[in-house]
Amino acid sequence: MLRIFKDTHIDFVGARRKAYIISGTLLLIGIISLIAHHGLNYGIDFTGGSLIQFHFNKSINTEEVRSVVADAGYGNAVIQRFGKSNDYAIKIINKTKAVEDTTGPEIVEAYVEPNPTNGESHIIVHVRAYDKKSIVSNIQYSLIPFNKAKEEDIISVQPSDMYDSELEDGVFSLRTLGMKQGEVKTIYLRAIDSNGNTGTSDSIQFKISATGQKTSITNIRSEIKKNINITKSNNEIKKSDGEILKAAFEKKYGAGIVRIDREDMVGPKISKELQFKAVWVVLLGILMMLIYVSFRFSFRFGVAAIIALFHDILITVGLISMFNIEVNTETIAALLTLIGYSINDSIVVSDRIRENIKKLRKENFVTIVNKGINETLSRTIITSFTTFIVLFVLSLIGGPVIRGFSNTLIFGVIIGTYSSIFVVAPIVVEWELAKPSRNLKIK
Image 1: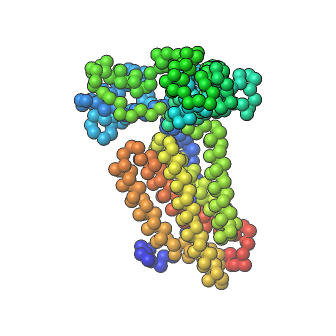
Image 2: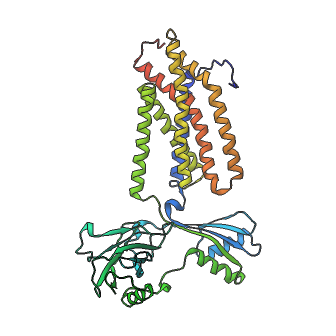
Image 3: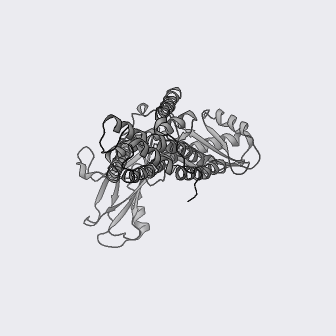
C-alpha cells in the first residue's frame, strides 16, 4: 500500500489540548457567524418561493435584468447567469412568515367525468384549490357535510403537482356502484394549506344517468356539468412570479423578447412535522452507529465516535453560515454523507488501536493509541486528499446548482479527517486516564 508518511512517531495524544483549543475556536466562530447572520441562509426548499429560468432573444446584461426584476417588486431576488450568455436563473425567496397567514385555501374549480376505463362504476373528480398567502398542502372530500362527518368519512388527496404551490390540482376516483338511476349525489370539498389552515368547504353534485349500463362519456359529461355549482373564473387567480417578470421584460424590451424555460414554485417541503421526524431519524441513525461501534470496539470508543460526529456536523454548519452557503436539500444530503464519511474514518483508526491493544499488551495505553494513529495516517490522508480533489473540481466546474453540495462536503472532509486523528482517540485516552477500564498501563 502507498504510504506518504513512513514510520512516523508523532505524539498526537500529547497535542490533544491544542486540538481542543482549535475545535473550540472553530465552534465559537460558527456560533458568532450564526448570530451575525441571524441563522442560516435557507433556500426555497425551506422558505418557499420560485426558481425561474429565462432565455432572452438578445443580449441583456445582468444589471439590466436586476433593474427590471427590482422594479417588478422582487428587489431581494437572486439573479445568476448560466449556460448561454442569454440565459438567466432568477430565485425569489418567500419571506412571508407563516403566522401572518390565518386563512385557508379556497376551491376555485371542480368538475366530474366518467372513468375512461370504468365508466359505469366510477367517476373521476378534478378539484383545483388556491391560497393567496401560503401553499396548498392537501385537498379533502367527503359524501357527508364536514360538520357532521366523522374522521373516517373524510378522505385526503395529495396535490398532483410535482411541487408545493399556491395553486394545486387534486384528482380522485369515486365508486358509484349501488347508486340508483337519476340519483343526485353531493361531494363536499375543502383544502388545507401548509400552515394547517382549513379553507371554506364547497360542494359539487353529480347525477347517475343509468344503472349498470355503460353510457356515452359525452352524454354523462354534459349531464354532470349542468349540476356544477362552484366553478370560478381563472382570472381570480393571481399570475405566477414568472408570468409577472415576463410581462415586465416585454414591457421594457418588446413582445417576444423572453421565454420561460422553467418555473418551479416550491413550498416549504420540510414542515414542522417532517422536521421533527427528520431529527428523530438522524438521532436514531446516530444511536445505531453508537451501538455498532460499541459492539465492534468498546462503549467508550462508540461514545467518542458520536462526539466526533457532532463535532464535525456543528463545525461544518458554522462554516456554511460563515461563507453564507445556501441551505437546501442538496446541503442536507451533503451533511448526511458527511455522517457516513466521518464514522468510517473513525472506525479505521479505532480498528487499528484495537489490534494494537492485543499485540502490545505490555505497552502503556497512550503509546498504543499514538502508534495506531500513526500507522493509519497515510491511509487517512490519501483517502481524504483524493476525495478533496474530486470535490474541488466539482466545485469549480459544477456550477452554482451543485456548488453548495460540493463545498459543504469539502468542509466536512477536512473537519472529519482532523477529528478522526485529534478527537476520537484522545477522548478515549482522557476517559481512560480519569477512570481506567482496561488491564493496561495508563501512564
